[in-house]
Amino acid sequence: MAKIVVVTSGKGGVGKTTTSASFSTGLAMRGHKTVVIDFDVGLRNLDLIMGCERRVVFDFVNVINGEANLRQALIKDKANENLYILAASQTRDKDALSEEGVERVLGELAKEFDYIVCDSPAGIERGAHLAMYFADEALVVTNPEVSSVRDSDRVLGLLSSKTRKVEKGEGRVKEHLVLTRYNPARVAKGEMLSVDDVKEILAIPLLGVIPESPAVLTSSNAGSPVIANQETDAGRAYDDLVARFLGEDRPHRYLTAEKKGFLGRMFGA
Amino acid sequence: MDWLKFFRGEQPKTTASVAKERLQLVVAHQRDGRANGPVYLPKLREELLGVVRKYVTVPDNAVQITVQREDGLEVLEMNITLPDAT
Image 1 (tube, rainbow over the protein chains, first blue to last red):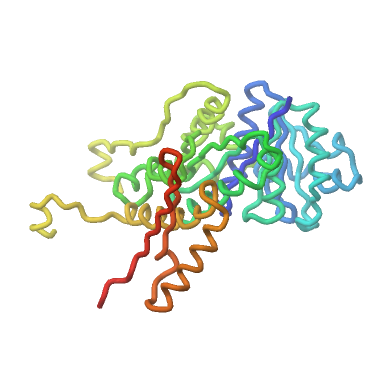
Image 2 (cartoon, each protein chain N blue to C red):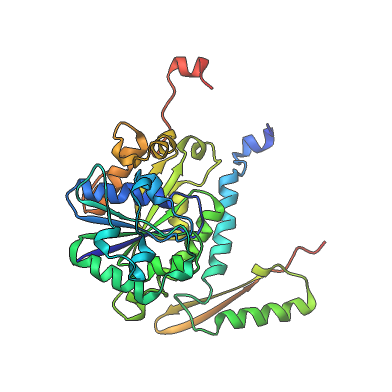
Protein backbone atom coordinates (compact mmCIF):
# COMPACT_ATOMS: atom_id res chain seq x y z
CA MET A 1 0.00 0.00 0.00
CA ALA A 2 1.53 3.27 -1.11
CA LYS A 3 1.96 6.09 1.33
CA ILE A 4 1.07 9.59 0.13
CA VAL A 5 3.20 12.37 1.63
CA VAL A 6 2.49 16.04 0.95
CA VAL A 7 5.22 18.66 1.25
CA THR A 8 3.45 21.88 2.13
CA SER A 9 3.95 25.23 3.88
CA GLY A 10 1.45 27.90 2.97
CA LYS A 11 4.14 30.50 2.38
CA GLY A 12 6.19 30.47 -0.81
CA GLY A 13 9.95 30.33 -1.07
CA VAL A 14 10.56 28.43 2.16
CA GLY A 15 11.96 25.28 0.54
CA LYS A 16 9.04 23.02 -0.40
CA THR A 17 10.45 22.01 -3.78
CA THR A 18 14.00 21.67 -2.41
CA THR A 19 12.60 19.45 0.33
CA SER A 20 10.39 17.44 -2.07
CA ALA A 21 13.36 16.79 -4.36
CA SER A 22 15.72 15.70 -1.58
CA PHE A 23 13.09 13.77 0.37
CA SER A 24 11.96 11.73 -2.63
CA THR A 25 15.56 11.14 -3.74
CA GLY A 26 16.43 10.00 -0.21
CA LEU A 27 13.53 7.53 -0.14
CA ALA A 28 14.60 6.16 -3.53
CA MET A 29 18.26 5.90 -2.46
CA ARG A 30 17.07 3.66 0.36
CA GLY A 31 15.38 1.31 -2.09
CA HIS A 32 11.79 2.56 -1.93
CA LYS A 33 10.04 2.98 -5.23
CA THR A 34 9.07 6.64 -5.18
CA VAL A 35 7.29 9.12 -7.42
CA VAL A 36 7.35 12.87 -6.83
CA ILE A 37 4.55 15.00 -8.32
CA ASP A 38 4.69 18.74 -8.94
CA PHE A 39 1.27 20.20 -8.07
CA ASP A 40 2.30 23.75 -8.96
CA VAL A 41 0.41 23.90 -12.25
CA GLY A 42 1.41 26.97 -14.22
CA LEU A 43 4.63 27.52 -12.27
CA ARG A 44 6.46 24.23 -12.47
CA ASN A 45 9.94 24.09 -10.95
CA LEU A 46 10.47 20.61 -9.57
CA ASP A 47 11.75 19.48 -13.00
CA LEU A 48 14.52 22.11 -12.81
CA ILE A 49 15.53 21.17 -9.26
CA MET A 50 15.61 17.48 -10.29
CA GLY A 51 17.51 18.33 -13.48
CA CYS A 52 15.02 16.73 -15.87
CA GLU A 53 13.49 19.85 -17.44
CA ARG A 54 14.56 18.88 -20.96
CA ARG A 55 12.89 15.50 -20.73
CA VAL A 56 9.38 16.73 -19.93
CA VAL A 57 7.07 15.72 -22.78
CA PHE A 58 3.78 15.04 -21.02
CA ASP A 59 2.71 16.32 -17.62
CA PHE A 60 0.28 15.76 -14.73
CA VAL A 61 -2.58 17.66 -16.43
CA ASN A 62 -2.12 15.66 -19.66
CA VAL A 63 -2.57 12.47 -17.63
CA ILE A 64 -5.61 13.83 -15.80
CA ASN A 65 -7.21 14.82 -19.12
CA GLY A 66 -6.40 11.48 -20.70
CA GLU A 67 -4.11 13.07 -23.33
CA ALA A 68 -1.27 10.82 -22.21
CA ASN A 69 -0.95 7.78 -19.98
CA LEU A 70 1.19 7.59 -16.88
CA ARG A 71 3.88 5.55 -18.58
CA GLN A 72 4.39 8.35 -21.10
CA ALA A 73 4.39 11.13 -18.52
CA LEU A 74 6.56 9.63 -15.77
CA ILE A 75 10.18 10.74 -16.09
CA LYS A 76 12.78 8.34 -14.76
CA ASP A 77 15.34 10.07 -12.56
CA LYS A 78 18.84 10.15 -14.05
CA ALA A 79 20.56 8.97 -10.87
CA ASN A 80 18.05 6.67 -9.13
CA GLU A 81 16.23 3.88 -10.86
CA ASN A 82 13.64 3.82 -8.04
CA LEU A 83 12.64 7.44 -8.60
CA TYR A 84 10.17 8.95 -11.06
CA ILE A 85 9.04 12.52 -11.56
CA LEU A 86 5.63 13.72 -12.74
CA ALA A 87 5.98 17.32 -13.90
CA ALA A 88 3.35 20.03 -13.60
CA SER A 89 1.90 21.64 -16.65
CA GLN A 90 3.47 24.98 -17.52
CA THR A 91 0.68 26.32 -19.70
CA ARG A 92 -2.52 25.61 -17.76
CA ASP A 93 -3.82 27.13 -14.57
CA LYS A 94 -4.64 25.36 -11.33
CA ASP A 95 -8.30 24.81 -12.28
CA ALA A 96 -7.01 22.14 -14.67
CA LEU A 97 -6.67 19.90 -11.60
CA SER A 98 -9.91 18.15 -10.69
CA GLU A 99 -10.44 16.21 -7.50
CA GLU A 100 -11.58 13.12 -9.41
CA GLY A 101 -8.65 13.39 -11.80
CA VAL A 102 -6.08 13.70 -9.03
CA GLU A 103 -7.68 10.82 -7.14
CA ARG A 104 -7.60 8.59 -10.22
CA VAL A 105 -3.92 9.32 -10.99
CA LEU A 106 -2.89 8.83 -7.34
CA GLY A 107 -4.82 5.56 -7.31
CA GLU A 108 -2.97 4.31 -10.39
CA LEU A 109 0.40 5.36 -8.96
CA ALA A 110 -0.40 3.66 -5.66
CA LYS A 111 -0.42 0.29 -7.41
CA GLU A 112 3.21 0.66 -8.44
CA PHE A 113 4.94 2.86 -5.93
CA ASP A 114 5.81 2.69 -2.22
CA TYR A 115 5.79 6.45 -1.74
CA ILE A 116 3.98 9.23 -3.56
CA VAL A 117 5.43 12.64 -2.69
CA CYS A 118 3.20 15.63 -3.53
CA ASP A 119 5.07 18.92 -3.92
CA SER A 120 2.42 21.51 -3.02
CA PRO A 121 2.26 25.00 -4.51
CA ALA A 122 2.34 27.96 -2.13
CA GLY A 123 -0.95 29.37 -0.87
CA ILE A 124 -4.08 27.59 0.27
CA GLU A 125 -6.01 27.60 -3.01
CA ARG A 126 -7.00 24.71 -5.26
CA GLY A 127 -3.53 23.36 -6.08
CA ALA A 128 -2.43 23.34 -2.46
CA HIS A 129 -5.76 21.89 -1.35
CA LEU A 130 -5.58 18.99 -3.80
CA ALA A 131 -1.90 18.33 -2.98
CA MET A 132 -2.80 17.74 0.67
CA TYR A 133 -6.30 16.30 0.27
CA PHE A 134 -5.33 12.65 -0.25
CA ALA A 135 -2.24 12.67 2.01
CA ASP A 136 -1.44 10.17 4.74
CA GLU A 137 1.42 12.24 6.11
CA ALA A 138 2.58 15.84 5.73
CA LEU A 139 5.96 17.53 5.85
CA VAL A 140 5.28 21.11 6.93
CA VAL A 141 8.22 23.16 5.71
CA THR A 142 8.83 26.25 7.84
CA ASN A 143 11.46 28.97 8.07
CA PRO A 144 12.29 30.40 11.52
CA GLU A 145 10.54 33.62 10.59
CA VAL A 146 7.18 35.08 11.68
CA SER A 147 5.23 34.99 8.41
CA SER A 148 6.32 31.45 7.59
CA VAL A 149 5.41 30.14 11.06
CA ARG A 150 2.00 31.79 10.94
CA ASP A 151 1.28 30.34 7.48
CA SER A 152 2.41 26.89 8.63
CA ASP A 153 -0.04 27.08 11.51
CA ARG A 154 -2.78 27.96 9.06
CA VAL A 155 -1.84 24.95 6.92
CA LEU A 156 -1.92 22.72 10.01
CA GLY A 157 -5.51 23.86 10.54
CA LEU A 158 -6.37 22.78 6.98
CA LEU A 159 -4.58 19.44 7.38
CA SER A 160 -6.71 18.72 10.41
CA SER A 161 -10.00 19.53 8.64
CA LYS A 162 -9.83 19.63 4.84
CA THR A 163 -8.36 16.24 4.03
CA ARG A 164 -9.96 13.02 2.89
CA LYS A 165 -8.71 11.10 5.91
CA VAL A 166 -10.36 13.52 8.33
CA GLU A 167 -13.54 13.95 6.29
CA LYS A 168 -14.01 10.18 6.12
CA GLY A 169 -13.23 9.76 9.80
CA GLU A 170 -10.20 7.58 9.07
CA GLY A 171 -7.96 9.35 11.55
CA ARG A 172 -5.71 12.29 10.88
CA VAL A 173 -2.83 13.23 8.63
CA LYS A 174 0.46 12.63 10.44
CA GLU A 175 2.30 15.95 10.61
CA HIS A 176 6.07 16.49 10.61
CA LEU A 177 7.89 19.77 11.09
CA VAL A 178 10.79 20.50 8.72
CA LEU A 179 12.61 23.65 9.74
CA THR A 180 14.69 25.02 6.87
CA ARG A 181 17.18 27.88 6.40
CA TYR A 182 18.17 27.56 10.06
CA ASN A 183 21.06 29.73 11.15
CA PRO A 184 22.33 28.66 14.61
CA ALA A 185 24.69 31.63 14.89
CA ARG A 186 21.79 34.07 14.56
CA VAL A 187 19.69 31.99 16.96
CA ALA A 188 22.51 32.24 19.53
CA LYS A 189 22.49 36.02 19.14
CA GLY A 190 18.72 36.14 19.68
CA GLU A 191 18.12 37.29 16.12
CA MET A 192 16.24 34.20 14.96
CA LEU A 193 13.51 31.98 16.40
CA SER A 194 15.02 28.77 17.77
CA VAL A 195 13.92 25.21 16.92
CA ASP A 196 12.33 25.01 20.36
CA ASP A 197 10.42 28.26 19.82
CA VAL A 198 8.96 27.00 16.54
CA LYS A 199 8.20 23.57 18.00
CA GLU A 200 6.43 25.19 20.93
CA ILE A 201 4.30 27.43 18.71
CA LEU A 202 3.33 24.85 16.08
CA ALA A 203 3.18 21.92 18.53
CA ILE A 204 4.00 19.16 16.01
CA PRO A 205 6.89 16.67 16.11
CA LEU A 206 10.18 17.80 14.55
CA LEU A 207 11.43 15.67 11.66
CA GLY A 208 14.49 17.65 10.67
CA VAL A 209 16.35 20.94 10.75
CA ILE A 210 18.09 21.99 7.53
CA PRO A 211 20.77 24.62 8.06
CA GLU A 212 20.94 27.69 5.85
CA SER A 213 23.51 26.52 3.34
CA PRO A 214 25.18 27.73 0.15
CA ALA A 215 24.91 24.13 -1.09
CA VAL A 216 21.15 24.50 -1.67
CA LEU A 217 21.71 27.13 -4.36
CA THR A 218 24.68 25.40 -5.97
CA SER A 219 22.72 22.13 -6.12
CA SER A 220 19.74 23.79 -7.75
CA ASN A 221 22.11 25.51 -10.21
CA ALA A 222 23.31 22.07 -11.23
CA GLY A 223 19.87 20.41 -11.22
CA SER A 224 20.79 17.85 -8.61
CA PRO A 225 18.94 17.50 -5.28
CA VAL A 226 21.12 18.66 -2.39
CA ILE A 227 20.80 15.27 -0.65
CA ALA A 228 22.90 13.77 -3.47
CA ASN A 229 25.77 15.91 -2.24
CA GLN A 230 26.69 14.22 1.03
CA GLU A 231 29.73 16.39 1.66
CA THR A 232 27.46 19.34 2.38
CA ASP A 233 25.72 20.18 5.64
CA ALA A 234 22.27 20.53 4.03
CA GLY A 235 22.77 17.25 2.15
CA ARG A 236 23.57 15.38 5.34
CA ALA A 237 20.71 17.07 7.19
CA TYR A 238 18.27 15.84 4.52
CA ASP A 239 19.78 12.36 4.72
CA ASP A 240 19.15 12.36 8.49
CA LEU A 241 15.61 13.59 7.87
CA VAL A 242 14.80 10.72 5.50
CA ALA A 243 16.35 8.18 7.89
CA ARG A 244 14.21 9.54 10.73
CA PHE A 245 11.10 9.46 8.56
CA LEU A 246 11.76 5.76 7.96
CA GLY A 247 12.05 5.15 11.68
CA GLU A 248 15.77 5.42 12.34
CA ASP A 249 16.82 7.25 15.47
CA ARG A 250 19.28 9.95 14.47
CA PRO A 251 20.31 12.91 16.63
CA HIS A 252 19.68 16.38 15.22
CA ARG A 253 22.79 18.09 13.89
CA TYR A 254 23.60 21.68 13.00
CA LEU A 255 21.56 23.08 15.90
CA THR A 256 24.47 25.01 17.38
CA ALA A 257 26.89 27.38 15.72
CA GLU A 258 30.38 26.10 14.98
CA LYS A 259 32.87 27.63 17.36
CA LYS A 260 35.32 29.84 15.57
CA GLY A 261 38.94 28.93 16.11
CA PHE A 262 41.56 31.37 17.32
CA LEU A 263 42.50 32.47 13.81
CA GLY A 264 38.84 32.70 12.83
CA ARG A 265 38.21 35.02 15.74
CA MET A 266 41.25 37.13 14.88
CA PHE A 267 40.59 37.45 11.18
CA GLY A 268 37.08 36.14 10.56
CA ALA A 269 34.11 38.21 9.68
CA MET B 1 25.16 49.38 28.52
CA ASP B 2 22.56 50.21 31.10
CA TRP B 3 24.43 49.47 34.35
CA LEU B 4 21.34 49.34 36.54
CA LYS B 5 19.85 46.71 34.27
CA PHE B 6 23.14 44.88 34.25
CA PHE B 7 23.23 44.61 38.04
CA ARG B 8 19.58 43.63 38.28
CA GLY B 9 20.40 40.85 35.85
CA GLU B 10 17.75 41.94 33.34
CA GLN B 11 18.19 40.60 29.85
CA PRO B 12 17.37 43.01 27.06
CA LYS B 13 14.58 41.59 24.88
CA THR B 14 15.94 40.00 21.75
CA THR B 15 14.10 40.34 18.46
CA ALA B 16 13.63 36.56 18.47
CA SER B 17 11.73 36.67 21.74
CA VAL B 18 9.60 39.53 20.42
CA ALA B 19 8.86 37.41 17.36
CA LYS B 20 7.86 34.48 19.54
CA GLU B 21 5.47 36.54 21.64
CA ARG B 22 3.85 38.09 18.57
CA LEU B 23 3.47 34.68 16.96
CA GLN B 24 1.92 33.14 20.05
CA LEU B 25 -0.74 35.84 19.93
CA VAL B 26 -1.59 35.56 16.24
CA VAL B 27 -1.55 31.78 16.36
CA ALA B 28 -3.88 31.68 19.38
CA HIS B 29 -6.17 34.05 17.50
CA GLN B 30 -5.97 31.91 14.35
CA ARG B 31 -6.81 28.78 16.33
CA ASP B 32 -9.99 30.21 17.85
CA GLY B 33 -12.83 28.10 16.67
CA ARG B 34 -10.71 25.24 15.36
CA ALA B 35 -9.94 21.92 17.02
CA ASN B 36 -11.47 22.79 20.39
CA GLY B 37 -14.64 24.55 21.31
CA PRO B 38 -18.06 24.91 19.74
CA VAL B 39 -18.52 26.27 16.23
CA TYR B 40 -20.12 29.51 17.38
CA LEU B 41 -16.91 30.69 19.08
CA PRO B 42 -15.51 32.79 16.21
CA LYS B 43 -18.87 34.53 15.77
CA LEU B 44 -19.20 35.10 19.51
CA ARG B 45 -15.73 36.59 19.52
CA GLU B 46 -16.54 38.90 16.59
CA GLU B 47 -19.74 40.11 18.26
CA LEU B 48 -18.02 40.68 21.60
CA LEU B 49 -15.34 42.65 19.81
CA GLY B 50 -18.08 44.76 18.25
CA VAL B 51 -19.63 45.47 21.65
CA VAL B 52 -16.29 46.38 23.22
CA ARG B 53 -15.59 48.68 20.29
CA LYS B 54 -18.76 50.66 21.00
CA TYR B 55 -16.91 52.01 24.03
CA VAL B 56 -13.18 51.73 23.43
CA THR B 57 -10.88 51.36 20.46
CA VAL B 58 -9.13 48.02 20.65
CA PRO B 59 -7.08 45.94 18.21
CA ASP B 60 -8.46 42.75 16.57
CA ASN B 61 -6.76 40.47 19.06
CA ALA B 62 -8.12 42.26 22.16
CA VAL B 63 -10.75 39.59 22.73
CA GLN B 64 -9.41 36.10 23.39
CA ILE B 65 -11.71 33.17 24.02
CA THR B 66 -10.64 29.72 25.10
CA VAL B 67 -12.58 26.65 26.07
CA GLN B 68 -11.18 24.32 28.67
CA ARG B 69 -12.56 21.02 29.84
CA GLU B 70 -12.15 20.16 33.49
CA ASP B 71 -13.80 17.16 35.13
CA GLY B 72 -16.49 16.97 32.48
CA LEU B 73 -17.19 20.71 32.84
CA GLU B 74 -16.61 23.08 29.96
CA VAL B 75 -15.21 26.41 31.04
CA LEU B 76 -15.45 29.32 28.63
CA GLU B 77 -12.72 31.79 29.42
CA MET B 78 -12.86 35.27 27.97
CA ASN B 79 -10.00 37.68 28.09
CA ILE B 80 -10.54 41.26 27.00
CA THR B 81 -7.44 43.41 26.92
CA LEU B 82 -8.11 47.13 27.20
CA PRO B 83 -5.58 49.64 25.92
CA ASP B 84 -3.45 51.55 28.44
CA ALA B 85 -5.22 54.69 29.61
CA THR B 86 -3.21 57.61 28.31
